[in-house]
Image 1 (cartoon, one colour):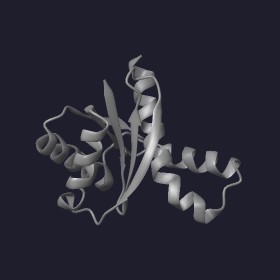
Image 2 (cartoon, rainbow, N blue to C red; image 1 turned 90 degrees about the vertical axis):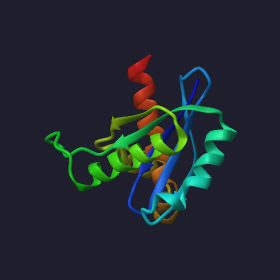
Image 3 (cartoon, rainbow, N blue to C red; image 1 turned 120 degrees about the vertical axis):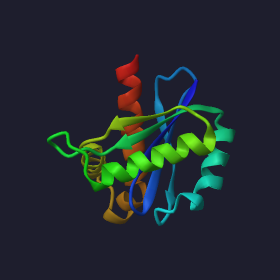
Image 4 (cartoon, rainbow, N blue to C red; image 1 turned 180 degrees about the horizontal axis):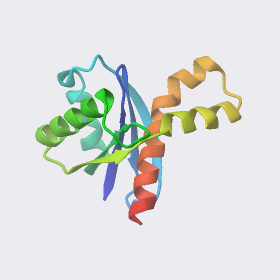
Length: 137
């Protein structure tokens, strides 16, 4: 069963997909948006169909003390819209520090700032999905 992993930010959505066995996550793209769900429906539908997605995991940014802030609530709203639009199970997954961890990995690879900016959200989506897959195995 393939799973879609999403890192939903204010301007971009990082996208990752699992393998059929649910062992590994691969980043596939970054979608630009302005927080209007209708803008990304067609692109997400294409990804879901192309990869035969059966479940969606959306990163859930919590504050370090575990509370849910504005960004976390926006991701909860996005997850609800995903579930309603695509009739797939959607699970929120704690994503605290994934973007910072992705940034550190890219820095250690000596990637330029411009290149990091292009792939950071996709890398964060991979980290969210891989964390989910590891916890469920």
